Length: 282
Image 1: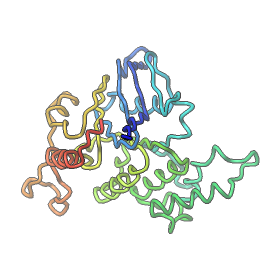
Image 2: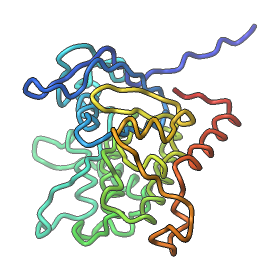
Image 3: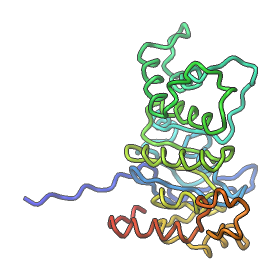
Image 4: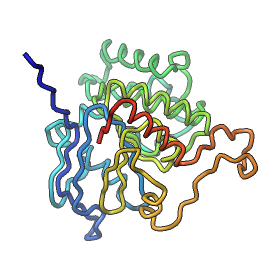
């Protein structure tokens, strides 16, 4: 008997969605699907609607028109299955909160009426700290960490919710190039078991890791990674975009030039990967 191919599971389904802030359109007539274990990069100019799209997926705001389903449910009902890493994490540097305390915040929904974490919550926090390779600093003050370490702790906090999808809003905005590479490598490993959706401006840098790109500027267009060109990105941002060239003479940081890859070179790598695996992903 011939086996029937299993249909691709849609994790996020957005149909004809529109949203406005005080009458000012932020997103208009958006339709997009994100599938299980996709690695999606959301790109676009500031104010184009990227963070608004994440908030809609989280159920923090509701569309004025159209619909959005996450794991076949309303975003509010699906929220326990979604981990979120915000762009900014505001905290008092004088407040004595440890790395372990921050990660345990991901288990707050399970805290008992007397305000104590269960042993199972502490075990989950310990496990995800080990997963992000920070268990050795579990008791260190969060304020003492580097930017890259803080981002890993915030990812651990999101993973402590035991999500099926991870949403990240510009996770590399405050980390150096070496930390960015480590973070993307880690997200690539996470993507083997869960869906990753990430807002970023570094499309050239993340191209080898992602399966598709959501171009957001009031409207939304979704492309397989290999279809993204410099012209598409320039049209998205509304002006010419200068991409980093792999040229020692032009590189302002020659000691780090191995990190300076052109957008097209990275896209060619991703395209070759898709061709070899036969994957379209979008």
